[in-house]
Each structure stands twice: as structure tokens, then as C-alpha cells.
Image (cartoon, rainbow, N blue to C red):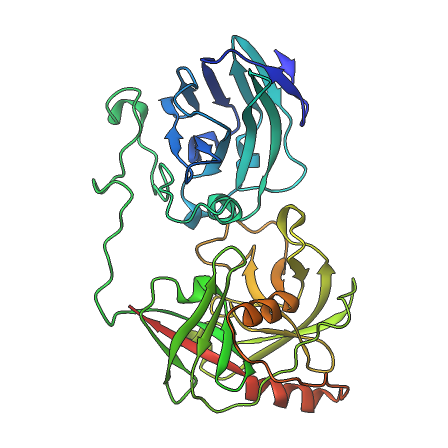
Length: 387
């Protein structure tokens, strides 16, 4: 066995077999697949030999470049791939032991396979995504790709799935979920008025929705634009309120005071605006994502899409996710108030690309807390999503 070094490149045979052994305590919760980086993203599932061993006989089926990815199957129960280490990666008869990543990751790219000067090669990676296979799919622009073993809630013993083939979904429907009935309530989130009749929220807030109701008057909104990769969406709605100015002329600084405004847990905490305070605790998101930043103001389910404002009430970001509270993208809490926001500059650029007319607004310089909160109350709205 040889210790593997991230970035190490190996020459491999064109039809090399590959076996991956997840020796850690949580290895049975991890799936492995090879995902092509061209041609729309073809996916080839590894065969499962036992709860913690995966095998692919000959990797020639996926032509071109592809990545071998290990990921948490069921994101509803939390957890990270880190708990499956040590991971042994055997290819062409040589076993490499992968070092545990420094960050908590729910999807890890174990290796990249490519061709250089007619020779098949493999680069050991060990990099990944805190928010799992969903984040990987978005980052690689693979919308619509069916990920094997996704959201399988229980891992059956190896004798219960018919040999070495892929494990079927327990409900017998593969990976397709039943569609909600028309009009069914799907959930709620938050949004921010950034121009008259224009609201920004998260793409995942309105995912699968057909009807969107805004504010206490339940004004009906229509979708103007969606950016799945950056988890942003624009809605058009004739609703009351005053837009927040977007701060794009000065960058965030580490330790800067901020407030998060949104509508978490409406069914439990009520439908009035909630405002919490904190600071900018990191200038990048998971895996060094510079489109996001980390903040410490407490949030809850339903805060997604809400406003992150500076001490003067200017919009500096949109609440996106939390390690502790994000419902479907949560992979387990490893720290208190580890939350992520999308930088406001992306909101501005998305609005411009969508043809939304954002009127020029001078940034606010009034930092009287009562006035700042009053402006947030006039701009941040609840969003009720129906099928």
C-alpha cells in the first residue's frame, strides 16, 4: 500500500479495474460513481461488493475525461465523507491510501481520469464540496443528471440487492420521487425587494414550485430568472415595500458586523420578520467558493433567500445555507452558526443579465439600528411555495 498525495498523477492502463474500500465507521453511507465531464455528464455507478467496498471492472466505458466521486447517499441524515476515511483506492493492482481531507466534505472527488498524449492517466484529488453531490452537480453544470443511489434512506445488507449490481431504491421506483399534487404546499422561504416589483431569493426556495405567494397579502409572483449554479432566482411581483440598496462599491471585510433578516420557521415562530446579528466570519464559502461568504448570525429553515445587510442596512448578501439548519443540503453540524451567504454583487449581475431594471440607489449611511431594521422590514418578504 502506498500513501496517496493530492495532485499525484499516475499512468494507468486503458481498461484499468478500480476498487475503493471505505474503511471508516460511516463507509456504508457513502456511494461511489464515475461522472463524465463532457457530453452532458454521463454517470456510471460503481458496483457494490459489500457495504463499504465499490468496484468498477475496466474504466473504458466512460470515454473522455471523468471524475470518480464519493458522496453521502442520504443528505437528510447529515454526515460527511470524512467519517468514511481511511479510504483505500486500488487501481491496476496498486493500492493507494487517501489522506483525510482537511475540510468537512459531503462529496469528495477521489480522482480525475484523463488522456494526455495518447496515454491514460489519473490524478488523485481528494477535494470536494461541503454541501455534497448537489453542489458538485451545480458546479459542473450537470443539471438533470441522475445521480445513482441518491437519497437512499436505508442501506440494505449486501445479500438483499441481488449480487454485485447497483442497489435499487427501497420504494422500487429507482430515483424518481412522486410528484406533488397541484396546489400542494411545498414550503416557505424569504426574499428581498431589490427594485420595484423585483424580488431576489434562492433557486432552491422556489425549486419544484408553480405558484409563489409574496408577503402577508399573498401577492402572486412569477419567475423572471433562475441561476441554479449560484442558487439565485428573481421573481416579479406587484407588492408593497421599498427596495434595499445593494452595496457593490466596497468589498466585505473579515469581522464586519452584519444582520440577517428573514422568515424562519413560520409555522413555529410566526410570520413576522426575524432579525439576528453576527459578523462576517469567512470571506469564502465551502471549498474556497469566492461567490459566497460565511457569517455567524443565527438563521433557521425558511431564512433562505433572506437579506444579509451591513450596519447601515445595505444589502451585502443573500442567505443561502447553514451547516446546522439547511434542510435538504445539510450534511451535519460541526460548529455553531456556520452559515453561508451569496455575495450581493452576483445579485446585481444576475438582474442585469435578466434585463431587470435596477434603479440607481445611493447606499445608506444611516446606522441607527431602529431605522436599519425598519428598512429591512419594508424590503424582506416571506415566500410561500405551492406545486
